[in-house]
Length: 255
Image (cartoon, rainbow, N blue to C red; front, side):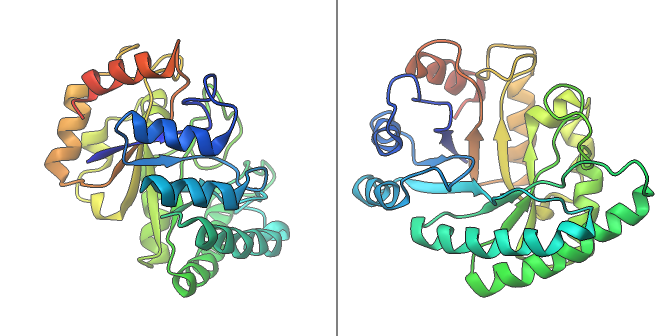
């Protein structure tokens, strides 16, 4: 396992420029970075900084964000996937993140689930052509994302399994999962082969690991036992200078 700094938040106070944040991540000994939306980023400058430093771009987000559970938005979603795959090819991004969109109260949960699986199959076919995987992220509905359809790791894994493509995997965000009171050992048991990326932040507050109540020795131990060797995205909001919070996170995670 290796750490990937979410430069949407990490190094932001010290460096307004995204390319400078990549250089700062390299100087801090990090192998990878990731960020959220890409349309507001100087992609050519980002790619140049990645090439200069040898830092990987672990992920960025498909945008504009559209609903998977509303068929009326599916063509717009697929157009966003096409555009984002091109942006990923420009930057060398290793994965693109998608979320479900908000629940439609007037429609049954099963119908919404089936709509999401249907459009994800089409999106996965596009990802296969581009050679860049999509990762589906469940988001907590208790703090940041009330009303989001997919807030369950188990249902997210169900969707990935039903799509049945190596170009769609789950993004397991330990922060969102913990907020939803899931236990990683239970929700990932026997299904970790469906996970493509991991992110972390502490609870409460979504700050650096080591600032809250999560037992990180146990959580990282579970990932080790499951054989995870990929990036662990540091998607936290730093409390203080980035380098200080990074030291706290590294000590807590043991990475």
